[in-house]
Length: 577
Image (cartoon, rainbow, N blue to C red; front, side):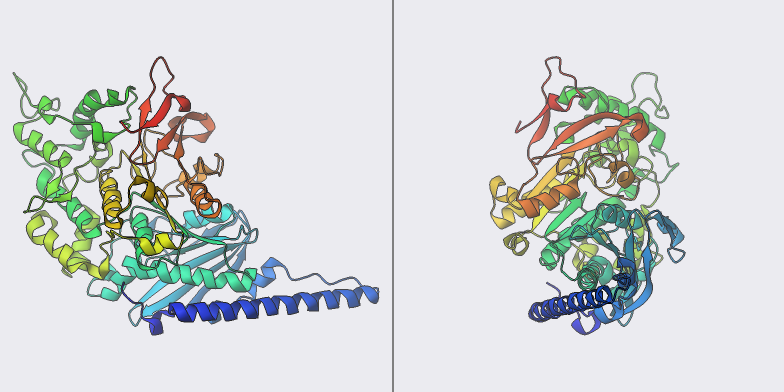
């Protein structure tokens, strides 16, 4: 574990924290008792004198009376405001690339925004939203990609359901990571420190406003956010009682190496054997569905379990009079490119470096990973964090040179591939992971590898893992949000409109991953399945198309057949085969 610089970050040691928490509780209880007694005394005097009783302090007054700088060390206030539900907040300080210029607030709340200094050259923008109708819980939300963006949509989502919520900008501004250049402290913030100081700040600000601590501390994130949650469970097991980690960007350096490898494999757009996005989305995707869509017993455009799809790209090879320039078939070289993308990458010793892409994902990956251009996040990570060289050429990437160097350097200790979360488990922590089976950015085959890696490292069989970690494979879900399947599981904004759509579903453990982790932690009810929902054309007003219960790994969804309606949730069952 990398120690936090206590002097700069204001984060206390465990012993100090324990002692201060006890002292704070005594002071808080005494203060609350004294305040209540004083209010009763004043109220009684006014009544005895026949005068109108004075109004007691409102939540708004208590919000505006907060002094965050005295509660959160090394912090400078940006904003302290009571905000009413329906207010459309604007954030002119946000980088335009974050695409979060404003956000509608969905609960009356106290908004605290601050900068927290983490080193002489780094600071973290932290937002803490404290709803008036508090459910007693705290949830911390996270980011994606390389972004330095506060995910306001997730703060609004959480507070609408009564959670106090924390979000940070991961210690930098914008989406390129250019601030990493020659600044390891900024990389450390991005890797793990920003999240940690954010949740510590949130926990401390609860006390003076609500006069009590949270009953539970939770995490909700996807992609980079999924990685952040797992990193926190590893480094700071006391931070969270429950973690929801979607499509986690674990083994981060190797993930970004894998993404960087696509340009050398596909070639640049317009080069001789380059496969255009149109061919990926039509010719290749249609053949993938022809070979694999019916494996689950239903031809619906959704491959329920891509691990069962053994796609044969040779069927796309041009024959007869078709030329290699045809969009209906592929040249021999192009067939090899397709095989490479769907095949695992191994290191020089033959060990698995990274699994292949999941069949079905090509329909969305065509415009991203396979578009014949550098994958921006990988290029920027190597330029600004790995090599500190803004001119590094992504087209020159090789695993032997660049991939090996990145993993060895491990900037900011960002790797995140623990094989033991015993400290988190032993204090009752719960980890709920999910991954879309049509993920077009992080292959859905990587999370099962991590699950098995964790199981082996901790010496736990499936029953043992089920006690604290459950992993759900979500068919027809792309990267974190949207997709052709029953993808909506209450995963929050996830950079899209998932939060707003989720409001039209029950907030319960069956339909919502945040509600599920709360029930697991607080009521001991572990989720057996997560019910995903598909609205017609992803439009709430058109009604629900169908729902599906997604199974926990290693179980898989199996269609019952025998004339069953595939859109009926009861037509599918979780099996081992």
